[in-house]
Image (tube, rainbow, N blue to C red; front, side, top):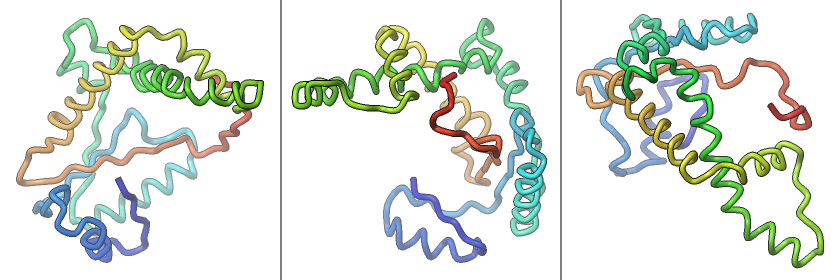
Length: 193
């Protein structure tokens, strides 16, 4: 998915039409945009970052003539219980869902690279500490564990699209404001989790 940066959102339709052309991925604009503000992630612990996010959201509200809707994903997940009443804690449910399938797939998908490198150079490839840690974790994850956590991420994805974003609505498009990081340095040589 491409990402466009700009100071004037009105120029985006031009970029989008050039990028997508007549692609079926390009959806017709809907009459209304809803802005979700997830209380599970906002405000962030970094006051300056939160101020920037809030200023951005205020600009969106002004440009789109709508007000943000605050939402607690954790509370909504608990209420909907999309994978049954025994899985109502979203943080625990997703704790390994984003990482375990990736770590396992990465380890086994790169096995050929590691073997070819070792054969050619007589030593294992150099990788930074975080990647080595991921490989160590990945090789210990069973196929069953990987599939269980992948299934969880798929249940979460479908729940988000259907219940939170209501993607099939003809009336509106829903966007969510989401901080990627806490807005502080994250050095690659830091100790893995």
